[in-house]
Length: 115
Image (cartoon, rainbow, N blue to C red; front, side, top):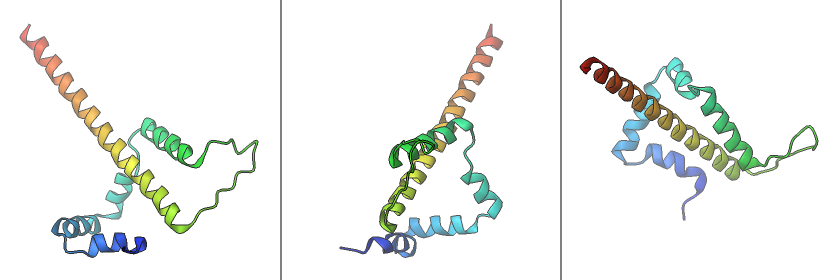
């Protein structure tokens, strides 16, 4: 069984052509592009991500409880990975929704013009 701490480095340094191309692409991005890609495009997406993380950690209100979370490096990494995957999924869903809305608007405008 492989060491979990080496999985990411194995992925990016492995023989997979796709992994190397992806790593090269990500490495070539400017800091501004990475900042832009890292920001949620809407408050709705940010809210869903926050609710997801709260759900993963527990939802005891900190003003009534002295909440401390203890974990190890591996579990913290899994939490981070889960949050990142959720963020990517939500960003893609948001882009798809915007794309579909744009197509519907174009279709509605074409139908208006045909009348």
